[in-house]
Image (cartoon, rainbow, N blue to C red):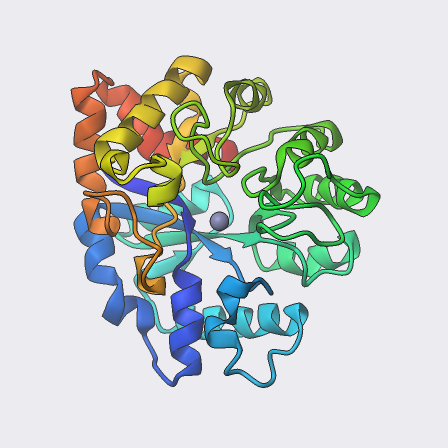
Length: 321
Ligand SMILES: [Zn+2]
């Protein structure tokens, strides 16, 4: 079984290392693990934000003074890196992804994680031209579009945020509710006319943190034809270390399947062990080479081969179209 990972932070590592003078970062540092874990495709996230987490390498880049500048640097690094990766195809559609797979290549879709680099909906078109397919208005911070998961849960989308969501839909960019706070989630559903996804969030019922979704939110995403992507980050799997395991993440998958139907469950693994301490995945999912162990846990919980295949790739590909 091979897997489409619906949320990957590899462009963070690519950008950081290319700015330090490295080349072929994905091939030299990541490809072996991706292949061992059975990754067939990735949704590469543009995460370039201004929050404290991102001060790590940006603070040493004098020309990266604004969010817009950071995004542009990251896009330049992504472009240069992809030019060095004949084994990785940038794709926009399911058809292109399947063609890349048939040719023995990995494939990559593009998403944006936080829109603070944008002034408004008019700035989306150039990103859509580059192949953007999924979009989050915020990371955990508050910006001109919305308030993120770490903010006052009563603050939702701004008018500009609502207009941006409608523009995303016009351009074929799926609105992504992961990282929004509670009010923002419902505002997003209200502003969007079509499918809404949550690319990398787990179940609040099993791990009560603001980045995870309530059963009511899971059902709302199901009702809009969307998917929710399972996240390996230890703190979203369980609040205590004893429960931060691949087996517990499989229980999140089983709970989602019970609430929404297995056809609305996907992978948004969010591996970021390469960002350093504190970013660990759950035990057994320390990096992407552990993915097969996770699918064995799903099998142990009684999921059929068809359900597992859906979670691994089919459900997200269906929504991306
Ligand atoms: Zn994220």
